[in-house]
Length: 52
Image 1: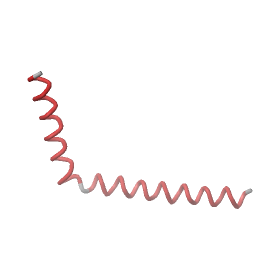
Image 2: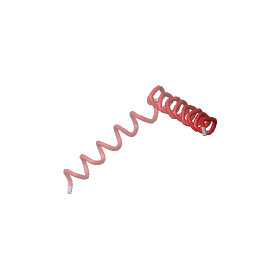
Image 3: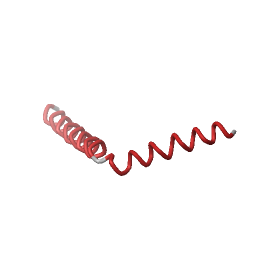
């Protein structure tokens, strides 16, 4: 029982570590994806909202 719990905890730790790395990569490299989305999404939403 304890061995299985340790394995599960290790798996969760690895998953959390990978998730944190993915989040860091996404947050560290927003120079290309973030501005485009930020500019396109709000502008399009505001334009369509005002026009409609």
